[in-house]
Length: 343
Image (cartoon, rainbow, N blue to C red; front, side, top):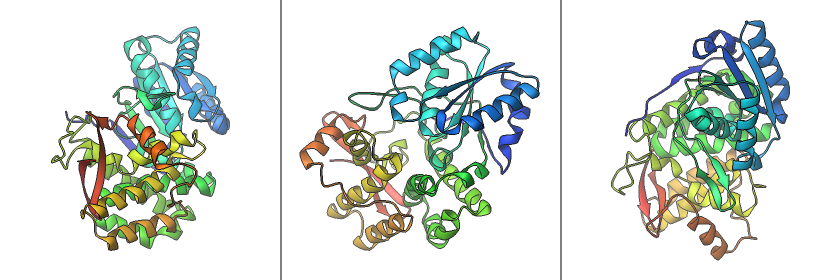
């Protein structure tokens, strides 16, 4: 099934223009954000009200633990008490957790209401805000409950990441590197050339990096909107985007999310490269280049020693990518090409 692309706006300074862009989607809005960026949430709330739009703000505790059914229920109850109806609109203001949770709420509240995505982290801008996946976690694993549900619009302001801690830029770059390895050797070279500029948050280079990463992800999800092409011969399958994630999600779960998503995916990519090299799909020289770029951005590459292979295998077995008793991996064939394989 093809993916219906929402309106995507990538513009330095776009945050200040949000009220002028979203008024067509509703007259009643609720912003959902977290405590890390409550000032940003209050700034947007004031701007929306000043523009004449009815708007409320829900501030959640930061962290992966809010991606749960219990928090979803609390948000739904709050939305009802705030007077939200089927013609209301949510605004997801935050990183991947807020985006996943708000999208999930929009998809189920009153059987579906509009929402707008305003990612505020490098990872969310470059990856999770694109593709229409929403979800909450269960104790057994990540995103085991979820929907495919598009925002009406994605508004990306690269200037928002210039105020982020350096670590947040590095974490986001794991998904950017993933996209380059999967589909664009020239972009991989660009990242190598511009590592310093990206890490120093040079606005023009950040915007280029985000825009290219979004373009690559769109090129994949447009062909397989609901991840239905699971045949291992389908090199257009959306499952390609799971490169690094079969191992990475298992590490996140084992660490009780002390390991960030980006860090876990970085380690996962290196680990899954070893599988690809072992199966003679990937040349050792390319595996070294990928690992070197991951290290260059200050991301970890070594498997944590406290987790045994048995623990890792059990955690991977709970993943959505475990189908008919087989684990599916997206494995690189080189820099710029990959395929789906079961192991």
